[in-house]
Image (cartoon, rainbow, N blue to C red; front, side):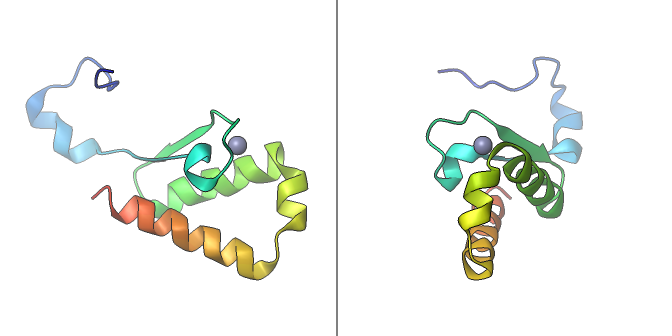
Length: 83
Ligand SMILES: [Zn+2]
């Protein structure tokens, strides 16, 4: 294991650049290694949806608006837990 953060972390500057992240695995794609990162929930969610549209179009195509809403809520819960 090991904390895979960028190694040049100065203790003082750490708190102002917290990056949130969400992996595709968190959302149920066990065979995808994509991880979205960002400074805000919205940024991470946008990256994740952009990734899903690009790399998992077949999955997106079968999702109902309700399911998309559900995964957006799941992302938000996971991201909120990182604060
Ligand atoms: Zn993926």
